[in-house]
Length: 276
Image (cartoon, rainbow, N blue to C red; front, side, top):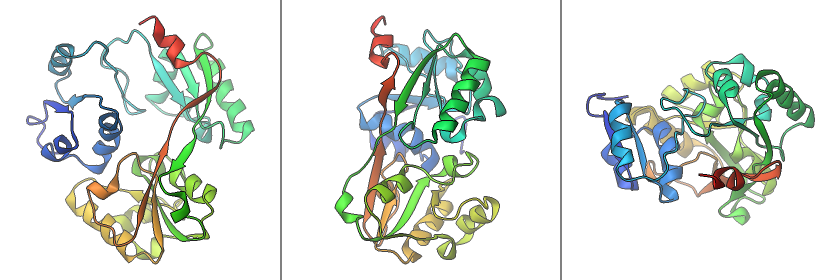
């Protein structure tokens, strides 16, 4: 992850800041969706200094920790997302379980693509670990920027790396979009994988139809680009949270997929946040 002293306090307001701080694809996946919305992102190593600097320019501070850590700051409102595709992960992994126990609000997302039995299972986990939390049930609608470019085509699907590797998912938003948009065929990327990407497939045997967007350093980004460009397909569908076209050059059309949150049942986030 580079020079930690140089990364003590990082501020990202533009896409150029991502290049300036030499961000990996995995870091970009965390920061870029916020920058897309005009939100300033702080990250780094020294979280005392980060907080003091952020306080100078912000009215509200959002700690976005994913499943990889618990908040380093005491939150006024703690929101946790529980994925029904991985229904029992809330009690199988740390710090996911800790976050679920601490949460004020738990959102069960992806209701529109999840098995109803898995939804019930994740609700049972919530009841077991944190019955006092407010529960919100929500869909995660997926949209492709150019659905017509996917229909009837031979497609390579790229997904968010951590989600489909150690996150144990075999598909993500890219796969759902490709299927919804009527792709003729979703290819197996494994025969086209090179070097570190090939090693990733050898390690994560459950991956058969998606290419993880691995990019821990320039060599891996180059391996990812070569794998994409070797693939025999008409179009690439990218389900990662970033615009991959900013970090690599594909020799075929790359269609970006986005996903959102649509509350189905329970208090809306707007209502919960209104008191702040």
